[in-house]
Image (cartoon, rainbow, N blue to C red; front, side):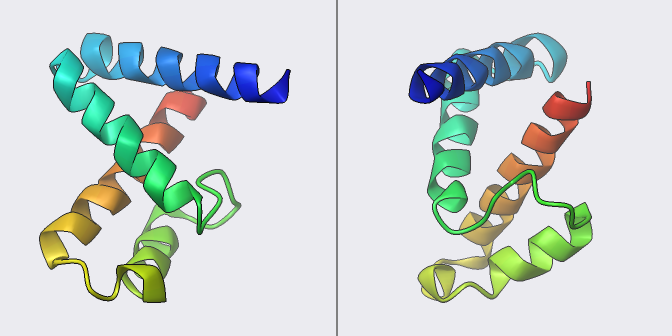
Length: 87
């Protein structure tokens, strides 16, 4: 049941990206994919502020081999998800 609720929330997030952030459906799915990737290592809803989360993500060993561009995309996915949750 919890898994279904989580998937439903990600579908809502994807729709929010399309409607509120003017992303294409494909781009919104890319953001959701990046969010899932980073959520394996960090809870995107933790109590830390966005800057702290960005710092943490950029220093995770799992992402040490990622380019700065990929790390930026991962951080952005968390920031967007947190905006969605606050909206």
